[in-house]
Length: 183
Length: 215
Image 1 (spheres, rainbow over the protein chains, first blue to last red):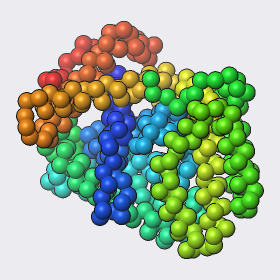
Image 2 (image 1 turned 180 degrees about the vertical axis):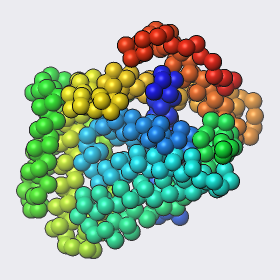
Image 3 (image 1 turned 90 degrees about the vertical axis):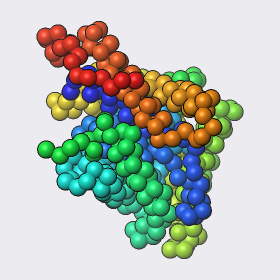
């Protein structure tokens, strides 16, 4: 890996952290659950950098958070995150960025469609796939109840997937894997 | 500087980071199977006492976890519905205890000490391309880039508001990202010019040829 790629990965990791400082939006549609911009950053990491570098950027962000920097939305950080009920979502972010990046690289759809599929499958599907079982185990509730609990975040996450897809196919298209012409 | 570290000279602060991490793992093995809410409440009280021993800063530190409260409330409600009140109380207490104990390690350990402690188990990963030197550079870069990005966004937003009555649009995001990327590439060039990563690449780094986006 050359220095340029390393620094760009650090930049995207910092961007995910910076998105945590965006004030959360409270939506009546989502039962008052705050929508934070942080998982938008996870989708963007995959769509902009592709599978490997995107996952590396998210892994770096998670690593810095676990080391103790309070960079998760709401100013949280440290090892306590790993002990909390949302630990699975944090690990799922890494896998989610990888899958989103992979789909963005491989899908042969129009740019917006492939970006949207990549963000929904990677940024939502894969993240929930890791997050919900851990939530169920940590909280001692059944899987189906954890699904209900996590469903309140779904409307916000869908909005973010559309937002990420709009960004990478418009103002960020020059820098994104998702909007490059297919060979 | 953003950090989860609270300066101090307590016993916790003086213990080596590696010892604290192992103690955390051992404690979690003992605490996770506890199902009696009374025992858990006692453990939580003991943990809160440790926080109280750090004075006002310790109490404020606990308050920083309030963003976890809505989720704990949802879990509590689901548990009462699915199991019983005592199971619900126990699981919320257990999560609170585990989170607060883990945070004790974070608040009493400097970021650099934590990195050094983690570098030991990471050593075998070196053959898979995880280079501790690059990893610690990357961590330092992230911590430095966060305030730079926030400042850059604030500046651009203010510039926009000074010139236009309309709300900042998508175009601002494009300009912001382009500026951030060119900052990153300048940092990369500066690092290469200073011989970063030279032991890995004996020959001098090639001059940058790829086109940099215009800021």
